Length: 409
Image (cartoon, rainbow, N blue to C red; front, top):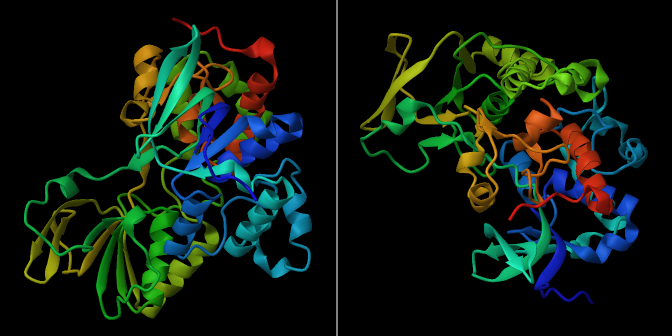
């Protein structure tokens, strides 16, 4: 039986147990199977994909936005083979995996690669660069005060923080709990909103999923979108997954230009054609009202409902406001990067750190995955495909001693 005692030291500590962390683990073992006992994964849940499962279940998301070739296994066709006999769970176009199918597949990945025992429960609150016997190391300190010393650290936490509109922070009057929530706080499971009026602020896929989920539960929904509601199959064009677009991106040596390329490539919020069809049908049924080119500027709780100011006038009263206003990446606000950035300062452009070619904070052995790695990986950095691209850089630096960082200090 596996001993759940966390080791006091390790070669590599991966912080976070989401899809990108799982991708890193499988790709690392594919290159160096003997590395199995040289790394640990730390996550509050103590298991793989707990946060991912919660998010998809809480927002009633039926399938992924990424095609079936994007997943944590090194073999791009592994999910398609796993899905044989479950064709109804691959959604058109491009075989988008259903949520349950993807979850089951990831469970199979964990089993096949024997990774269940790599995740230890614990919330990391600090990653502190130190020196041990003259060698640079990291103290990975958990919320209970315990610590593991690691030679290298990979931050695969997601690291995005809610992007709240200014007016939401200016609401002074008290209001009942749960009546104003960011989308990350909304859990549709078991939520009774029958007969309620819900205002959802935002025009992205999360807003659409919450709108459909709320209507299924008997609510009347208004969707307030700052611009026109836009229809896109992917949040970034497929050309960003290969040399078609990445060639010019990687050749660009101005970080400000790269940041602008990322902004333009992702292009703001959008919904898939399938979700747009559901929204239009709901409008025709009278269950949904879409207010485009409408920016909310203020909200006040008056008695038993919200009074919301938008577009120079007042919207009809509503019982709840859900803010599907997205998240943002900001290295300066990530507590797990604070000490590393203090000791190994690096430039940040629009919140994104300038990393080396292997996604390290320059001069250190602290690697970054996900959206914070976008200046190096590209616009798809936060996606499943971006996780695979990040792994190709990180694994190379871990398995080849010649690529060790020239650590300062």
